[in-house]
Length: 450
Ligand code: PHE
Picture 1: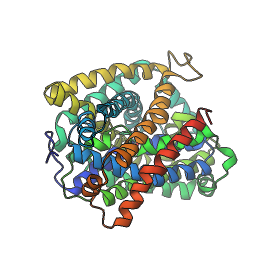
Picture 2: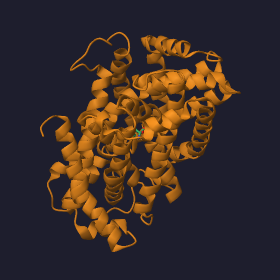
Picture 3: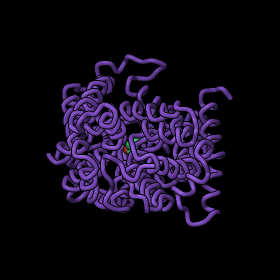
Picture 4: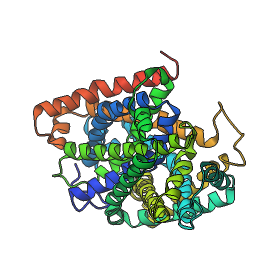
């Protein structure tokens, strides 16, 4: 197998951890997790999500990094070569294609939401939220998403900035994420502190951690599982392509644990920051994608130096979204460079342009085409459902099957270098049986087949 990727390599394990954490921690943790937890009744949903992270996400993350490092190319070519190595069908490269397409679809709407966060940097900094009521804050949000021109402008800006970083390659990615993670953590803790002092903290904690299973449907279980994939950036080749830039010596197992842990902590902190405000202000936990934009400004509007912290928070949120977006498009860019012999710059322009165009569909789905629905879902809802609840679990399932059943045990053991045979065998058991079966059951149950 190849010794290094043609696109370069991370300078150290720390750099990889930062980049992969940068990919994992994003809008999924701070924007999506709280609102879907709210929509699905809280505690039981959160517990299922945590279980999915542990039993499905973590082993698949180990598998995905391992495949990437062994193949050392874009996911499409990696899967083709690894299948050849294992004497399996070339068809496996479709797994890479599924990922490239999922990344493209996700980024198209991810960028629009990141645009909301950018718009909020300006709003919070200008002080419009000072002393604002819950109604006032909701109005400001409503005005933003009702305006397609504004959303389009922010979406465009976000796409340009993302593609600029991707164009600079691995080194560019590294530098961007280095200072971001610690700063984001500090400000989240500060917000949790605000919630403890001024919000309905106890009510929030019991909403998030008291499990009442009658509140989750099988559809809710699928959402929790899909979100485990989404938040860990699994099932579409983002972590695989980052793994392909990983130096040979680095231990994959412990690295994956660190990334999953960091990601989970950020999501839970976000929940603990947001729900005290929701309950203290009589807001609806299930109010959907606008949740953080309708709650956090209330906190910023009422705390000392709120405009400063608020501005900082949304800046960091934009950065977190940014370091995730980069990994969403990297598999496509790496493939264009490898197979179409494009320069990195050209590859970025084409991939970025296509994503930007599709993003217009999401922009409009919040205003002009908000009533155009298929199965009761807007364009944005459909993209979100299709990617998080269908494509990522399907991709993750295939990765688990490939790592557990197709790749030889000798090869996976030598690539992983886990410290003890017990660890290796437990991992193998999880990817061979537990993850695929769990994904299949949840999936079939949600679409009413079983
Ligand atoms: N994990 C990112 C988030 O939580 C989103 C993402 C999904 C990034 C899939 C890459 C791949 O926001």
